[in-house]
Every structure is written in C-alpha cells, then in structure tokens.
Length: 404
Image (cartoon, rainbow, N blue to C red; front, top):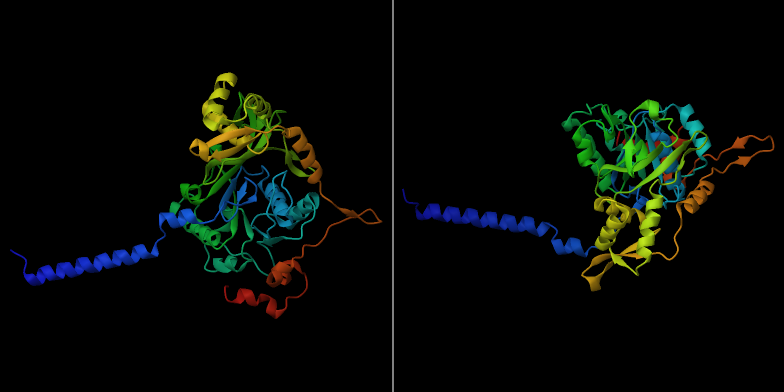
C-alpha cells in the first residue's frame, strides 16, 4: 500500500523534530577542542601517591598497618609537610573511623606527633555518629569543608551492602564519585582477597570505579622483581620490606616506595632495592647529552640485560632524581631523557627524611610529654561537635539538621 501525502508529511515532521533534538543535545556537549584547550593539570595531595580530587583505594591484608600508615599521611597532609620526602598540599583531613578504639588512636597520634588540621569522626562519637554510605542521610558528608580529604577506615565497615555483589558496591562507589566531583579527595582503606594479597577484596565494581589503587604489601626481591609474601612464616626474613604503591589499576602515573615498620614510630622509608640499577642506568645516560626514551630503554636492555618494559618503568621511577624527561617539539614531540649532572642518592634522601619525620614534642618540667589539641578555624561549624567536650550549643548543630 502506497503512503499518502499525509503519511509522508508526518514522517518528515518526525525526522525534523529528531534532527532538532539531536542538535540541541550536541549544543550541550563539550567539543574535543574545548577539552583540549582547558588549562588543567593533575595535582597530587601527596606527590605521585595520592592524586587530588580522586578516589584512591588503599588495600592490604588485615593487621598490616593500613590505619597507621594513613594516619601518618593524614598528619602530613593536614600540616602541609612532606610525607617521607614527597611534597603534600596542605588540606584539612576528615578521618571517618568505623574501626578503631579510641585508645589505639590516642597511642598512635602521640607516637606520630602533632597536627592541627586532622579531624577524627569516630563511629562511637557520642555527639554525632558518621553515617553509613548506603543510608538515607549519607549526604551529610557533602556538608564537610569543600576540598577536604576524606579517609574512610574501612570501606567494608562504612556500609551494610554485600561487598561481593556488584549492584551494592556500584551504589557505594557512585556516591564516592559524587563527593569526588564536588572537589573532595577520597581515600578508602580496604582489605585483600582471601586467596591473594596482591588484589583488593570484593566485587570488581570496587576496582572498576576507583581512580587509583594502591597496595600495601610485604615483599622481598627476587631477580629485580617484587615477590609478594603470602607465607606468614617468611615475614621475619631480613630481606623483607613493605611495598606501598600502585597495584591493580590507576588513571594516573604508577609509582611506589619501599617502607620498613618501626614499632615506636610507624612506617619509615626503606632503601629502594632497585637503586643500584638506577645508578647503572644513569652512568649509561651520562655518556650522552640526551637520549630519546625509546633509545635509552633499548640501550639499557642491551647493556644491563633488563627487559624493555621493566626499563621503561624504571625510567619513570628515576625521573626527577637521576634524570629529567622532557618533550621536544624539534624531535616531533619525542620524549627525551636528560641526565642530571648531580643527583641525590637514596641514602641522602633516606637520611634527610628520617630527620624531618621525627615527631616533635614539648616536655614539661615534670618530664611529661604534652601534645597540642587539634583546633582549626576553617572548621567553624564542626569545632564544637567534633573537638570539644563541653555541652553542645544549639546553633552548633544547625548545619546538620537539614541533612539528618
């Protein structure tokens, strides 16, 4: 049956309407050249470890020291001081703690030193308990100071979902993304899977929707590679160190450091087992004014017998200390590696960091150590409920009433 003029007219009207609708949608989207022209750069709350305005998952097996490590990082961020030699951006930190007894936090804060810009929001806070991330009032976290670092200890304890089911964990991670897109930096402490200390526990939605995944694992070196220790009987081996850095995934640059655990202080920087290799690579590079990254990798592969992929990772690792990596327009934007005439050995950095990270205390005449009470004028609305022991004033909770 042939279409009538009326039918043809209707079809044309529909096509025209759809075309206009499509044009309206496109006018609301961001063009490639617009995104390309933005003057934006990746910033790091902790240089090369914690990217700003991101969701960072820090995983490790139970009892390995994730809380202790994250408390030290929080202190350094709050004070704007280097963390083990890595620069930080001074930022208020909210440590949302669903796990630890007050006595544990008290002991560790005394060992780590002072901070005026870190706030603990404990699960058993008598004035204001932190909300579960899957509860109706989870948006209370949006009322925290914009741009703050939020540390959740642990991800598993912060919600009531089944962490092995993708739907529930997708909900939690989508809420984390909402906070991230508001300008918060999120750090989630998490456990390892039962069958391996190399991967994070639970649904793949956790890994898929996180931006940056860092593992804290015990390792020892074997032919230049990290071997994760999963046998508890080997943990006292003198060659064992802690590797803290990117494991499963990152949207940023991969990076890691090595640590040792001091029971009286927490984690300290350990010499990088690959330092001698970096020095050998520098000697090769120093024979030239510069080399492209590709040629440098191939040369090190031939002279040192290290796989090219491994060499490329080590070239990135040595950037800033042994050499600089630059893009050269005169060489079709090739990345060139330029040797530093003088470089700092790991021993120099290690010694300086140990001195800088010693906690400062004041001593009374009766030889009792005293520690300052955290106070931060940037947290005007939270100072009373979170830090004082006096009776709350009515107006101090006004900021919460519209959310709870």
